[in-house]
Length: 277
Ligand code: BG6
Image (cartoon, rainbow, N blue to C red; front, side, top):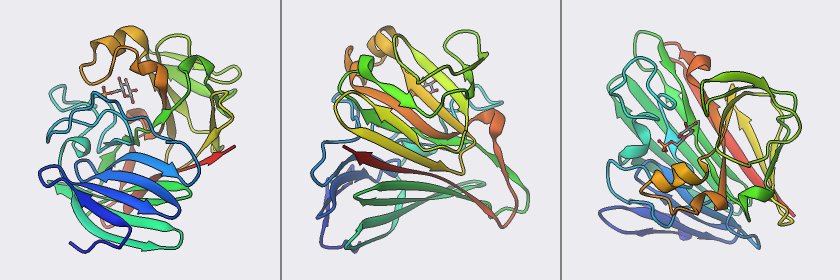
């Protein structure tokens, strides 16, 4: 496997690519083609990674950017299918790793049955993750999913997600209910909301003086999630108070907005993350 000078492979049973480039430090696991950490030059870590995360084939990493694909959350028809799809619980193939003065670009692929995908991670002063669904079949396929980004925050109580104001969303904490967002999204309890995409750049502010910017494309839905105390305590791979340290803002394709990919064509879901002081 050829790696450029600023990328090093650690681990053999569970390979992790360690990027140490003049523009950023980052870690990407082969399992799930999963960005575990990204720290642009002169900035603090941007992604949250649970200290209790389990690194084992078949188990999704808790934190970073899980690739949820080819469906989002529960499978639309099969209750036995794994939540959030097939991609986050298996090893991918590395296709290529390159670097230039702007950062490191790594490509990964996976294929199972009718499903074929490629993930491209560009890590530099910005982080871009793109998930391409390729339809190599003779029939159309229907795909949903998410780039389930966990952002590190000073304290969830200080967080405001901006630019979803006046957007319609489905609140799924209890009986799914359609609502309209009033003001910035704040967290004072469990949040599990699927917003219609507005096309605006989304901002995560947490009073730390740093703003995280999220630019999505190919994403008709934005999911905002925090499990809060009780659900966090019930999760074996998250400390009881772990929910205080992150919020998820996900470039998503929710099931009701699933994309039809025609034979011979593809769909790209991507998120571009940057920070501003
Ligand atoms: C979010 C969903 O995207 O992921 C939530 O909206 C879900 O409903 C959460 O609980 C975490 O899922 P998991 O499978 O990683 O625990």
